[in-house]
Image 1 (tube, rainbow, N blue to C red):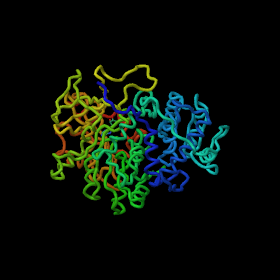
Image 2: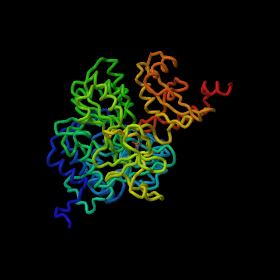
Image 3: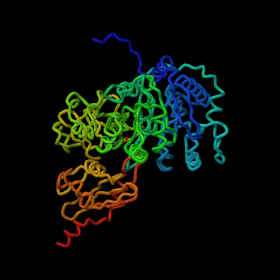
Image 4: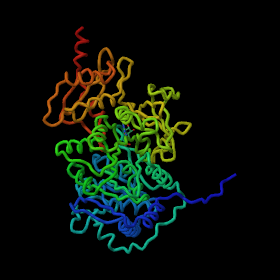
Length: 549
Ligand code: AMP
């Protein structure tokens, strides 16, 4: 027997309509690449988005067409999202930090019809425009006065383009809630980037989940600063979450430095923020230097890479800011798990809570998880067994855009995340490595993430990465690569002594290499592949000793 409820289609347009009716006067504040601060509200952004939708229609954009952006988090970028998704087209957020040939590949593969870009990225456009096969319209997200002159290319100024339109427009009804609405390419370390094509349905369900009290906990009294870029996995769903709840939205434009973030956090009275650990590393160092405090901030969500325990501890004990450690992937829209405290932990000593918060949290309702061994057998949630992490759920990719391989799921509908993890009896997930970064030493396994987290707990260490280096006896042994904090001195012996009580004996790195920089991917993750290349001829002292013996 079928239920007798309305067959109401889940759509991003319904988010926009709800926002306009209920939260039109809620402020949206944005820094811009021109150096000005925009102070508007959702009503104004939605009006401008409708003008943009009319302009895009006039330029020939039809439902299902891809509209690309190369943009920072700004009000104009938000308007592009609203316009493209509301009108039935597909917003394609391109990561400007990728190499030019990857950007070209992605835009051509997506067959983007229109490309809207921030003036910061004019040099990228100049470099790639002639290689773009489908993109015929280029819009600089600025006014006429700041519109860049890119030799031979017609570039429209966003403000003039929308000024020609009335904004008298209604978002069309969505006939199929499974129709595509967003596109984001994963920046894998091997092969070409792969497109994840979100639907209206997946986006709406993910938005509900993002708002929940144990996820991002967004409410109408919050002010939210998503430092995580809109081109990195949908800014973790923040722009839609604030649009449905009516939280004030603050956007940091092209600024990621500690000084600007601190000013925004305190001047705009931000209550919730979210970003990758490298951003918070910069902010915490700035706070330490200046002695500043965070009187308004309640909660920071950290994800994208493992949040070190020392970082979580600094936020919670020095600044009284609660940390939610989250795990996700572009393929998961991106939220998968979040580390909010549960009944079992709420009265536990803070040290215990911190240990658990260094894990990646419990799965959000909507994301099913399991860990399996090499043969695909499910492993127990005992806090010890580790295996490949598989997920399934309504906002998880089933296949990549225009991929020849088709489904990326196993016969029971599970997606292999490529992460290796442990799940404890309380359901807390602990990511130990990317499967391809696992260090196997004499058949034993060690977690590079655990070692890295322990190492950054040392007061002189700014950043740490662990890779496996060839060893004649053990196949591989861990090498710890360290960037020291400015002006600090520390030796290999100091580091090993510091690590000894914190990690299993056979995990202790065989050597410590000090470097000026650790390479990062376009989304701020440690680029292990490049690091391994950099150290491919590295000879560990233990390997020399082994050969000599
Ligand atoms: P992306 O799709 O670029 O966001 O990358 C997703 C990958 O980032 C995941 O598969 C993990 O390997 C890694 N990742 C995301 N969040 C975390 C986290 N909190 N701790 C460790 N790794 C993470």
